[in-house]
Length: 71
Image (cartoon, rainbow, N blue to C red; front, side, top):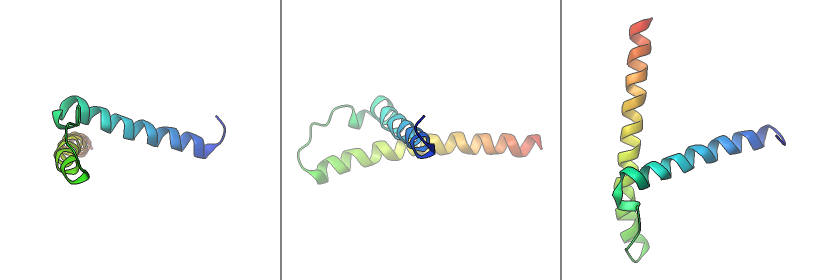
């Protein structure tokens, strides 16, 4: 590794790529963009990202509930 900032950058890039990959795999709206214009693409992209974030939140809440119940 080059320096601490490089390691942090790699972790952030991994997180972002994972989110986009989940959106492409599970949110069929961004699998392949067939729309013209930024407003139309944004309207198709936003629900997909929202869905990915809701899935992540559900997992986080489940982990938090398990941690609270075990302590």
